[in-house]
Image (cartoon, rainbow, N blue to C red):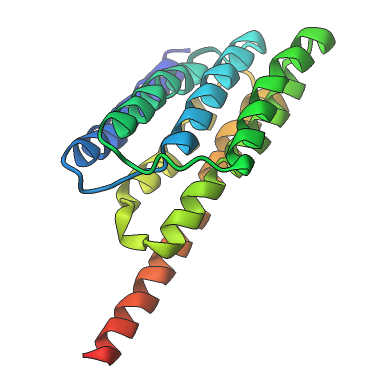
Length: 199
């Protein structure tokens, strides 16, 4: 049990380690994250935290709860600092779908359905960020997503109950972070090569 709590502490530390420089970069105007992506991620992450607690995720759920609260703070900070506030119809569809998970959970009395819906929405919530990062790959910090990939791997190890309800979300987000890192790295190389050819 102490081992799981220790792993949870490591995952929470990685959460803060990832978020602190990211928030500082937003405040300094160095990066401009898509605000609505962060609203979606904050809402889905916090609801998944509640579902993991309901399915006895224990200490492994704590970093997800901390992350949900900080993610909402990132959305507010990004909005205040005039980051990307464009909201498309697709963004609204993601948000409404995320909120629809609550009635599913309530009527089925099974947190799994909420986690499946929320994980799907959260991964799809990467859509606006992927679109923006593809066009402007230098506006995102890869270290942030690498830390979150590591954090979610530690979260899985810290879970006290392994089930689809508790494991799906952190596993899917770790995979999504990896794919985003690969795409941004590729786009940076392509754009840098293109600029070098033009000089």
